[in-house]
Image 1 (cartoon, rainbow, N blue to C red):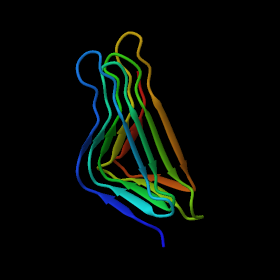
Image 2: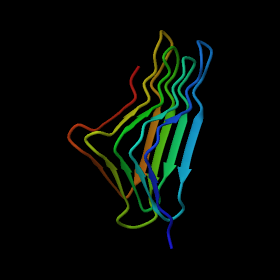
Image 3: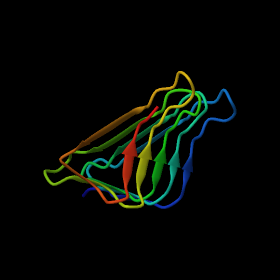
Length: 130
């Protein structure tokens, strides 16, 4: 039987200080679904970190994923749900993904969304800006 994951506690893997880069957060349930109702932060001054979520049969994002680089390149965020024909990624109206870069040389990070279907509700966002 597939395993499902429901998260409710914030995850903080931020880089510390002006030389810190964000960390890495990986969530993978094999054939199940993942529901994220908490903030995940992998931001850092010298570059955003990496967030990888593989809920093969579906992902619901109801909070913020932040992987920004305040003085450098934004991080990488990957959401994957391809384990079933009807696998769906939903970013609710309270959900958002931000991989913005900053500073003079910073670039936006990479957003990769790989799913059979995807829906972003009215106030939900996914961005990677400079």
